[in-house]
Image (cartoon, rainbow, N blue to C red; front, side, top):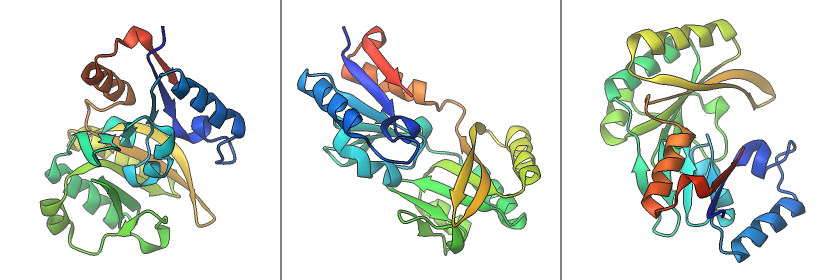
Length: 212
């Protein structure tokens, strides 16, 4: 018996055009009416994903599993904070190589380049050391039009930090196509977050369906 359904956002909840179809909306409503909770699970930051919270049953998993958010209480149920010293090194490398770097923290996402801001993001205007003293980073995205630079960052992450590159993807912004990677703590994954939330809710994983 299905007791919970986890649904990814991009190209799952949303179609290839970035829209939610009537068929998808109807299917979600049918499951909710049957008492089956729906949980959204995404690589997006919380600020980006939260606009879809009406489709999620109280909890949402964001930033590739780095953040589990309680939409009802409006607070984090869980977050995987990244070591500040490695965040600083990574930020300084990206800045030196003139790459775009995005830092997920709490409800927001800070970006070092104002020309690459999306509507839910904020510009990082303070010194990185000051920022890291006040905020816990849970996921980092590094972006560049130059694939070689992305490969350099991947090597840097592997050899000089405690982090992992959790995925690599194409990011389109301001009519530019960028190579991008998400970087997290090594214990982070959507699967681990899903298992953790199910344990918290006392739902057996054999009764769970994940759609991605």
